[in-house]
Structures are given as C-alpha cells and as structure tokens.
Image (cartoon, rainbow over all chains, first blue to last red):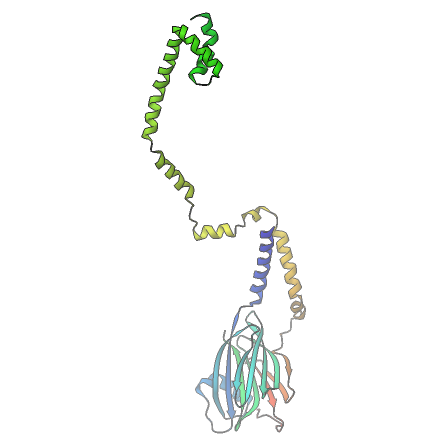
Amino acid sequence: MNKTLLFIFLLIIFLSFSSQGTWAQIPTRLRIIEASNVGTMVDPTLRELHHQLSSLFRYTSYRLLRDEQLQLVLRQTTILPLPPGRSIEMTPLKFQANTAELRVKIKRDRTEILDTQIRLDRGRTVLIGGPRQGEGVIILAFSLML
Amino acid sequence: MRRDCSSISTLIDKYFDQETSQGEQEVVEKHLRECPACRERLKFMGEVKLALQRPVMEASEKETFPWVWEKIEREIRFKPRWSLWDFVKRRFDLTPLIGKKIWIPATVVATLLLLLFYSAPIKKNSSHLPLPVVEYIESKTNNVMIYELENVKVTVIWLFEESEIDPSAS
C-alpha cells in the first residue's frame, strides 16, 4: 500500500514538472540601448537590430550600454540597475513550448513607472522605450536566446 | 542356554547398554555367575562394539572439527555484496505492483489531478487566435503606447514622459 501511494505521488510529480518545466532556466537576452539624435554612431553589435530600430524611430545614434544574457528561473525575480537611478525587475511566470511569459517592472526611486506582462517566443523582440537618458532615451530590447 | 537365558536376554542387552536398574543389575550379574553361555554372549557383544567403535573414532580423529566449524562460521557471516544496481532494484522494487491492477486507477487519478490543476489555462486558450504579446500593462506615472510590427516580430511599448507629446517615431 505504501509503495502504491509512493508510486502515484511520484507519477503526479513527474507529469506536472515535465509539463510545467518548473526547474527550467529561461535563456533571455536584455540589451539596454541609448538612442539619441547626437551623432550618427550605431553600435556594431546592434546592426541586426538597427534595421528594426530605424524603421520604428527617427533617432540617428544607437549606443549599446549593456548586453545581458540571463538565465532566468521560473518565478524568481531578477533585478538589474537601469541608468540613471532606475531598476528593472524581471520575473518569468511561465515557460512552455519555447514561449516565455515575463513580468517586467521598471522602477524609479521605488516608484513603479511600468508594470507589464509580455510573451516572448522564438524570434520575437519586445522593445520597451521612452525613459530619458541624457540627450536621448533608453530602449530595452528583450528576446529569448533559443 | 538354560531356560532362564531366554527370559533374561533382554536384561542382558540392557545391562550391556548400562540401562538396568539396581535390581535388574543384580539379577543379571547373578545369572552371569552361573551361566557361561551368557557370559560368552556378553563378551561377544563387547567385542562387536569395540570392532565398530575403533574405525569411527579413527575417522573422527582424522576430521579437524575446529576447522570445519570455522568454515561453517564463515559461511554464516558471509553476506553477499550488493552491487549498486541490485541495491536500487531492491530499494525501488516495483515488481509486486506489476502484478497488481494499480496502473489504471493510478493513471486515472494522476490525469484527473492534472486536469484540475491545469484546467484554467486550457479554458483561457480555447480560441485559435494568436495570443497577444502584451498580456498586461499598467503605468501610474506615464502614458503608454503599444505598437506591433508583425512582419519582423517586433513589439514596442513606449512610455511617454510628462513633457512629451509625440515620441521620435517614424
């Protein structure tokens, strides 16, 4: 009887974890870009993204401030500083069939200026932009590294 | 043999085996004093006994019983060493379960529990429309705009600062 119950319990645990991917690490790329109209310099590492950026925005200069390749863990929050005086919190909520649901919060001096939940899948880029940085703005580029 | 000999022969056997009572012993000894045939018979029984005892004693002397006992002890103390695979097999032996009909109810229970836990997401995603990229958005301090370019799979979330009316968008 004990072995039967143990077997059923292990079967349930195995099925639930295998479908949910609870222990999965989600390979996520976050690029922090400064976009401005000062000069025409485009960071060489942003060449693949430049086409999309130039079709969306009229900025002439794109400078890569940080390129973070993160291994986010399901339901665990990762916090990164954002210039100037801001922070970004990323919490993966789900990861299934190569699609991740990510909760993103941007805070400035503990004030929440953005709270959003985005869905990232293979090949998709989500850009969050607008916060001022010097003469330009900050653009955050999220994508999955699959 | 005198007539008494036939009646006393059982007692003589007992006397030879030293199993007679005090009274029986006296009777046998009295008879032996008077009966040479019984005396001869008793003597013959002793010789036969000796003839049988000698080879058994010689055989038992040849055997080294202490060594035999040591060997027996070693056999008792010896425990087979289980390999790691044998240990795992014994520990997680499910062969008793295979004979039992628990697979079907166990699978049904597991499936029902999983459906109970995950029925909400299944209901949510019942439509065939693609799921939105931005599931939820809120900003207490800024106006927000969402813009999607499906041909290049890019989604833009733009935060407008208070002094800004239009972003630098094309």
